[in-house]
Image 1 (spheres, rainbow, N blue to C red):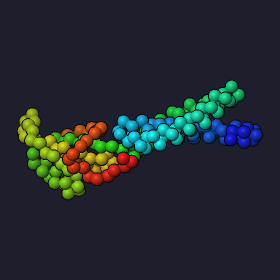
Image 2: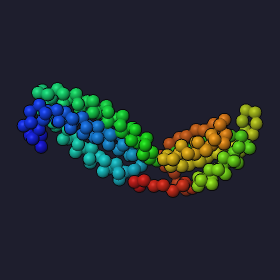
Image 3: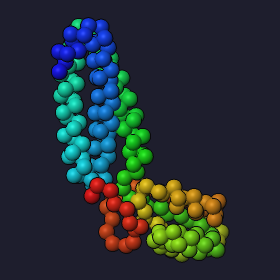
Image 4: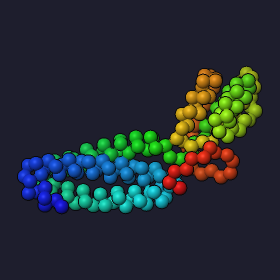
Length: 186
């Protein structure tokens, strides 16, 4: 495959640099996604991504290693592609928003009922717990949800009570309870 580009002279070298850079971005983006998905328990899709990732790595790394002495720009494209791939992979993961999230909100007794009802109307399961703050009675709202669309939960809470304290945490495993349906890759 690489012989075709070698026969093209300078333009061939430029195309190889572009291919190395682009392929490295794709490879590292897939690696970043794969690692995140493994941690979150998405094994099947992780295996597929690993296969694509390793085939790309072998093709790219072998070309760079074999030609590094003659063309340092292949190595530069490889390194810059790696850095760009890490960045793009993290953006992709953020946009895809895999996994579950625990949202905990501490709010006033009065606002808690309004927030819980609004969230339940949208299909979210909400557990309320009585609590005591520094000065007065409070409620803790506990909501498990898919990461994708979790911004909607936070926005609804803060629209009703801008002073509510909200904490979110990633959830590794969950069994039982109620979560608004949305499955990806499991």
